[in-house]
Image 1 (tube, rainbow, N blue to C red):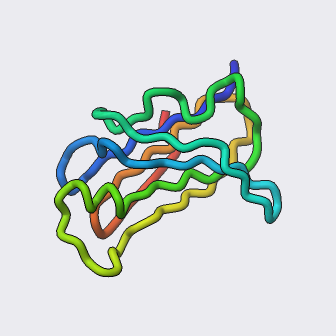
Image 2: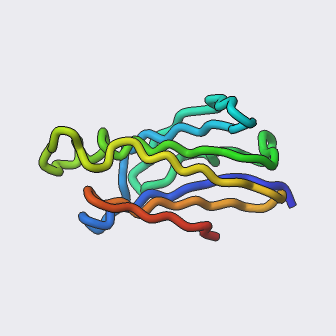
Length: 117
């Protein structure tokens, strides 16, 4: 089985997918952080393509950066300065060639994540 990476972002405060949220993917090698790609979520809170498809998959350490503050600004959440949650980095390891699904459950004052299926 080939490995690949996906995500799903849900706005738990509004009870809907987080549409239009910018996500960046980085690979981590020691102190080196390399930008691999930037995507946005669609109307279902997912990206239109796999974040890291099987053709590009390698085991290792990665970081997804969710630009929550920009999303919250455009979704009608009253602005604060500074916003409590702005940029959310999630660093994780992928140790085998399988499907890694890293969802984000987001509200203006909290978030959670897990390894999904």
